[in-house]
Amino acid sequence: MKRIAITGSLQSGTSVMTNALAAMIGFDVAVRPPYSLSASKYRLDPEIEKCQWPDSFVYCLGAFTDRMITEQRYADRFISEGSVLHELVWIKCRFPHHEPIYEQSMITGLERVVAEYASGNYDHIFHIDALHPSDVFDQCIKRLYARYGIRYLSFNGIDREATLERMADCLSVKPVLSAKHALLKATEYDTGEYDFYGDRTA
Image 1 (cartoon, rainbow, N blue to C red):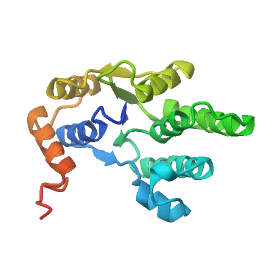
Image 2 (cartoon, one colour):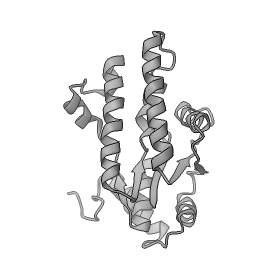
Image 3 (spheres, rainbow, N blue to C red):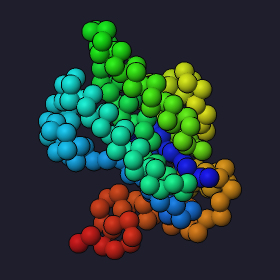
Image 4 (cartoon, one colour):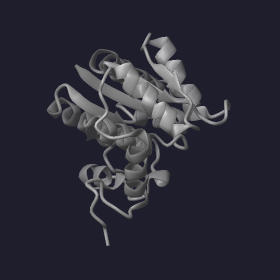
């Protein structure tokens, strides 16, 4: 089975790399649920940065549930953008020193469930290293990997073509598109010039 997750900080280009690898090897992408949809579904504040503790936890829990359902639909051939760990790390970074013990207990409990899912349901986790060692998001997710013994491979996000080729080698999958063209397609999709199927958006 080839259930893949690509993780990394908010500035590491995980979306581009996820879409590029998917195009390169012909896999589906399990996309990150847009916050706007979660906000509407769970009646959260329309702006994510304005979310206080209750709405932030609901978003984190809801996003995990939505991701899990989506990933199960793809069975054994998908690449998860950010993985189920993304929103968990987001809330841990957002509330790093929350004082009430019951709130920290809630985050810790959710962490255990999410980590168990990630450990048991991803065959390969590729992590794009942050450009700066002090990146808090990057440090947090690596601590989770260490704490729960989750196996992953780190990649340098600077030379993206070489990174994609190394990822394909690790998966022992024959590419259907070159790394260069897959990356070009993913970059155009990310900027909104084309949709992911190659059609112009305007």
